[in-house]
Length: 79
Image (cartoon, rainbow, N blue to C red):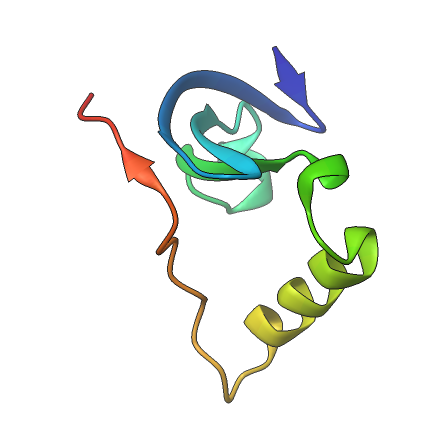
């Protein structure tokens, strides 16, 4: 499947409301982003606080003074 410009590949983790998938960026040569990365796919209907809670998490993660939140609720699956 595809999400925006990324090709979603195998699932590498999951949690109560999301899964983490390995993804490929087919435009990596032109957009300067890595060819392979991880994408968190969130089921908004399972998040307490809905889209607002997700927006707050993204805003906190993109703040230069805050590091990315860990996926403490994720169960990782080896490749």
